[in-house]
Length: 251
Image 1 (tube, rainbow, N blue to C red):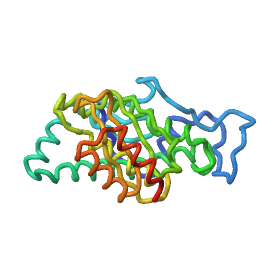
Image 2: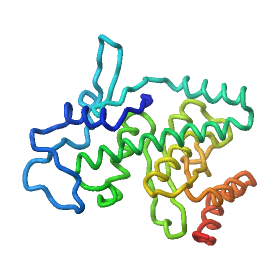
Image 3: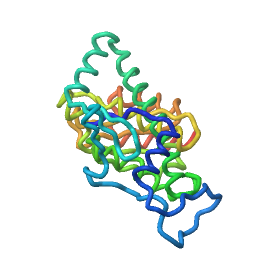
Image 4: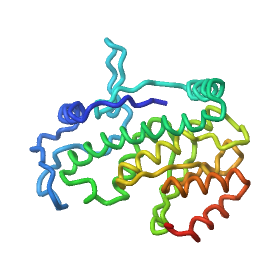
């Protein structure tokens, strides 16, 4: 799967102007949402592999249509990363993987926010939340990180749940009997932190590597994530964890 290497916001805009401009005049960011009377300034949602990836054979570089350089990595890379951290850090490897994912999520979402506001000409918060979330995830699905379902229905209870199928980490590690997708937990926590401007954390409560049907993650305030982690490690089922979270609300 490709791993994204972050670029600056200015480089992102230059790449969008070079690759996605339709010929219409670019829009300044407005303070409200309205329909466009003419052609949109930028093309949206590039799902074609040929359109999305740009190969520079001379330099050996691969970039996506937004100008981010990509590093192609096999599942063996994720397996080796996990094994190396376990060898060096022991039980702290989980924390390290979560931190790596979190830093990825934060930097990636900052660039994503700039892209969406440039494409649609409005502040990110004025766009439909489903559009925002799916627009953030679809390049990762195209790059091999799996399908997701982000459930926002429990926001009033103070948490979000996310299901992932075809996790790249599970594909790399196989059936281990444990929750293994700590990179994803950090990725979601970092992105949601940037989206909500609140300090959030993430934890996996079920995992295909453990034999569960799918990988499920909870994103919430750090204190609540510690509670969830304790319940999971104590043997609580996914249903029991969700029940406890719902019962305690946002407190």
